[in-house]
Image 1 (cartoon, helix red, strand yellow):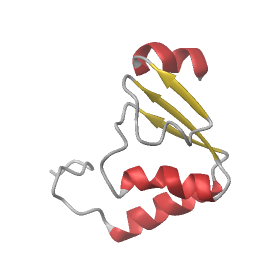
Image 2: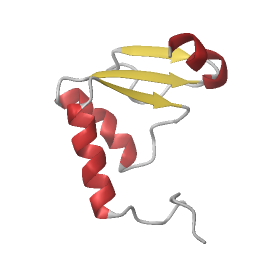
Image 3: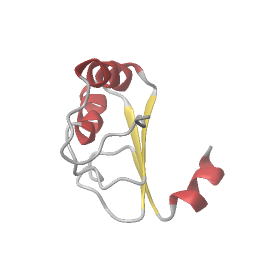
Image 4: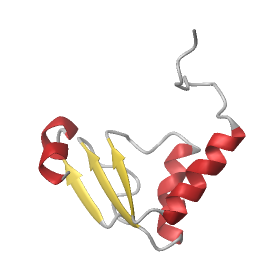
Length: 86
């Protein structure tokens, strides 16, 4: 049985990547939680959302390359922050 995760070095399924891009352009808000946003192509979904005029909220313990462009950045533990904002 294979899990539905992608390990480093594995390619994403093209259809899944396309669905992610569509979702990033149609969502009211893209919420990036607990990620450095340094691993592509998924990190690029933040840029896709921003270019579509969508809000981007980043919740992470450390800063990310997209913090300056994000609508909201909350630094801290996702397990502490998410219950407060959801």
